[in-house]
Image (cartoon, rainbow, N blue to C red; front, side, top):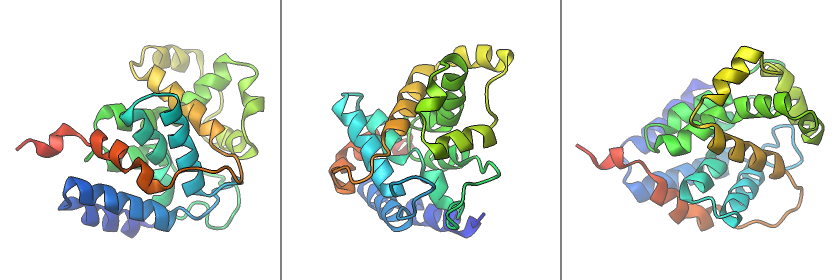
Length: 203
């Protein structure tokens, strides 16, 4: 893992104003998001498609922000640079959520943290769900732990973040259409700006 990438981004965000923080995040996503991460779209295209779907469905600023940034953990290391399916889980959902938790509320970061578990839950509870996923998602499903055990399933169903995480997971699976027209990153600027945590303004 290239830890210096994460630390460099933290340094860029540390003293930023709200608007500067969003600008820095967007610049990072644009710069690092040109890889294809085993899908037929780039990371940026995937993020934009997911965010636009969230906006079209009227899910609100925080859901749009989570959809846009849910895979930022992939961009913090070079997991997919070789173009092969990863054989070891890098916990990108935890890495991304941990980074973003300094700037966004749990309503943004917890769906991001849980979107991999949500895939495992859906595959466990819906026999048809696995077949609907992309080849890359099918592969990562097994790398990330496969079907939930009965105890894991019961624990997951008690999680208050279940609904938001499942919403994000479904957007994640839908946002992989090659050549689909999407808005630009800057078109989501205000959505992300409005989602910043109130903690940033408390002394």
